[in-house]
Image 1 (cartoon, rainbow, N blue to C red):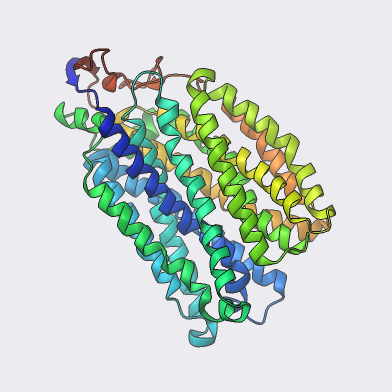
Image 2 (tube, rainbow, N blue to C red; image 1 turned 90 degrees about the horizontal axis):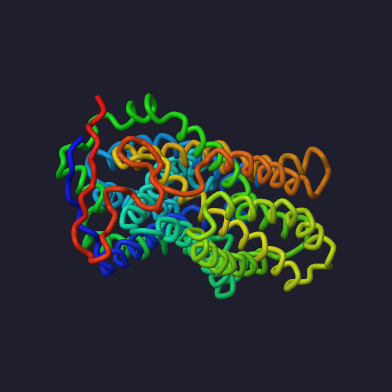
Length: 462
C-alpha cells in the first residue's frame, strides 16, 4: 500500500460542484415527474377508447417502464463514471435526459400515428429511465466526494434537495400552464409545453457542468493509477453485500416516494374530487415542503447519524400516511387541509431521501462508488419506484378500499427501517471497503490548515 497526497477542495470548488450537481438532479426530477402531472391529459390521447381507469393504469405502467431501464443505466453510466470520470459521465446523463423529455413533447398522439404513439412513449420513457439511472447516483457521488470532515451527510443531501426542487417545479409549471391555457387547449396541445421547457433547464445545467473539474477522489485514483478496469466485476465479487443492502433500502424508500408523487395526485382527483389544476398546485406546495424538510435533515444528519435519522423519519411516515389519506377524502374538497396533508407526506418523503443518498455513497470505496451507487439505486427504483404507483392503483381498484395505497406505504416504511439497521450509521468506506469514521473519504480528508494530507491508496483489484 502506497501513500499519495490529495489536495483539499476549496470552498469555492465545493459550492460550484454542489450547485452543478444539485441542478442536474432538478432537471432529472423535473423530467421524470412532469409526465406524472400530465397523465390526466395524455392518458386519453395515447390510450383512447379504453375505460378511464384502464387508461390511467396504462399511463402509470408507462411511468413504471422508465424505472425498468434504470439498472441498465446504472451499469453503463456507473462503469463510465468509475473508469472515465464523474464529470464526463454526468455531462452525458444530463444531455440525454433533456433531449428525451423534449422529444416527448413533440410526440404525435394515437390519433395521428396509431399504435406507434404509445409504443414511442414507452420507448422514450425507457431512455429517460436509462439516463436517470446514471444521473442521481452520479451526482451524489460527485458532490459527496468533495466532502470534508463531518459534512459527508450534508453534501450527500444536495441530491435529494435537487430532487425536491424538481418535484416542486414540475407541478408548479403544470399548474401555471393550466391557469394560462383553457382545459380544451391543454388537452389539445398545451400538455406539450411543460415537456418542451425541459430543454432550457438542460442547457443551463450543461453550461455549469462544462466549467467543472472532476472530483478530488477520482483525480486521486487517476494520479495513483488505481482506477479499476472492471468496476462491475469488482463490485459484484467484492461488494455484493453493500450492493444488496442499498438496493433493498432504495426500493422501500422509492416505493413510498413515488406513491406520494405519482399516486397521491390521482387519489386527490379520483377519490377526493379535486380538479387537475388544484392537484398540481397542492403538489407544488408539497414539493416546497420537501425542500424545507430536506434542508432540515441535511443540517442534522451528520450529528445524529444516518441510521437514527432514517428510522425516526420512517416511523413518522408509517404513522402519518393513513390518517392523511382519510382526511383528504373526508374533508369535502377543502383545499388547504388536503394541501397540508400532502405537504406533510411530501416533506417526510423528501427528508427520508437524505440518509438514503448518504448511504449510497458511503458504503462503497471510491474505485466502484459510482457503479455501486447507480446500480443499487437503479435496482431499488425498478423494484419499488416502478411498481409503487401502479400497484397502489391496482390494489385500490381490486380491493375497493380507497386507502389501500396507505397500507402499501406503511409496509414499505417498516421494511425500510429493517433494511436501514443493516447499514452503518456513520463513516465512509476506504479503499479497502472498511468504514472509516469521521464521515469522510480517507483520501479526501482536508487538514486543518488546508494543506495536503497524506492518504493511503489501496492496490487495484484484479
